Structure formats: C-alpha cells, structure tokens
Length: 270
Image 1 (tube, helix red, strand yellow):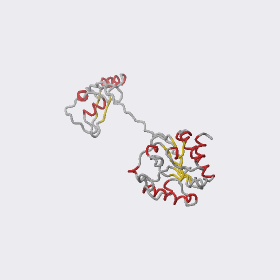
Image 2 (tube, rainbow, N blue to C red):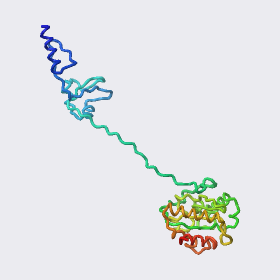
Image 3 (cartoon, rainbow, N blue to C red):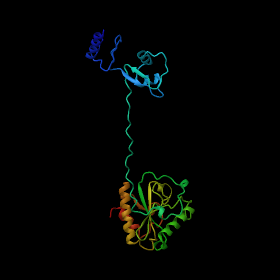
Image 4 (cartoon, rainbow, N blue to C red):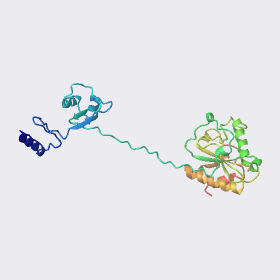
C-alpha cells in the first residue's frame, strides 16, 4: 500500500502538480493556470468583484461552490475568465507658461495712488488699436512732485471736475513726468477716459505732465515718450499711423503746439 502511495505521488510530480500534498485516497483536480485567485477585501461584494473583473456573479458562485452570497475579509475566490478593468492614469495638467508682462519700464500705480479704482464705473479695454497723446496743460506740473501731481489729477477726475461725469480713476493709462519717469495711471485692462465716448475703445492714453502750448517737453520726456510709443506699438501690434494727438478727435489745443509736432513726426515714421 505504501508503495502504491509513493508511486501516485511521483506521478503527480511528473505531470506538473508541484506544491500539492497528496494523501492516499485524495482526489487532486488540476488547477487552471488562467484562473485568477482573489482575496476578498473590506467592502467587497460579489457584484463589485464581478464588475471589476468583467465576469458574471454566477461564475464566481459556481467556481467557488458558494452557498451564501455574503463574503468575509480574507476569503479566497477563484475567478475563471477574469479580466481586470484597465486603470487609466491621467497625465497631470500642466498650465501653459505665460511670460509675465515686463513692468520694469514704468512705476506702478501702487507707488503713488491714494485712491482705489471704482470698479463699478469702468469698462474692459478690449483689443488695443490706437494710442492718443495728451498734455496735462498745467505749467506747475513740470516742477511739482509727480506723486502729488498724479494724486491731484486723479482727485479731479474722480470728482468729475471739468468732465462730463466722474471717472473711476485717473483717465490716462500712462503719464510721463519732466524727469522722464513713466507712471502707470489707469490699469491697461480698463478702457481709458481721455478721448471722449467711443473714442476710448481700444485706445491707450498717454499724458505728458506740463503745458506744451507755453513750454516744451524736456528732452528726457521726449525720449521717454518715444520709447513708450515704440514699446506699446510693438507689444500690441499698433501701427504708427494709429498714434495721434488728442486734437485728432476734437477741437482742442491738446497735446500742445510744442508736443503735437513730435506726435505727428512719430505717426509718419520720422
């Protein structure tokens, strides 16, 4: 009898049933290498396992001779024909790198403004298509502290002094003081209030501090103006022909008889 058992064990090893412990009288059923063995985890149910491995619940029940539908953690199940659903790993969304706008060429609004922009009284700028040059038309602006001058102009604009209505803030986008410094006025994201009505649409307003009917802009002011015009025209693809003085839109002396020729020369590429 012992010889018979030994012979049976050797036969099992030869046909590939390694790892099995065979006892006399046991019936060993060959295991299908394609059958997945699964260990039940917390929260598993027959339907969830069947859905995960794309097989029928009845297949699991039949393959494991289950008498009850409730499973317990650690229970081993055979899953014939199991095919696990593919796991898709989404690629991280990488935000496009948007180069920061160069703000080193002007002094930001925060460096001088004492009042905030009235956001209930502004319109978005929209596509930029032209530039209008002004003068502040006050002699004292050439010699006063630029910060105090900007605050005074903004106060007047917000009160609506000499205007059709109160402005949200100073009406110009950039201002140039006698020392050639460029100051941010109204943020460029907002439509200006310097050329009246629809003329402000897509129109960047630049104001040189001083009265240029009486005097001339300083050389540093002139150089700063030309540099600002070059920068804005290139950055926003505005044609030189679209650079005008305030008098282009209405009967006015602005930007003054000594500044107007400089604007015209730039407009015509001279």
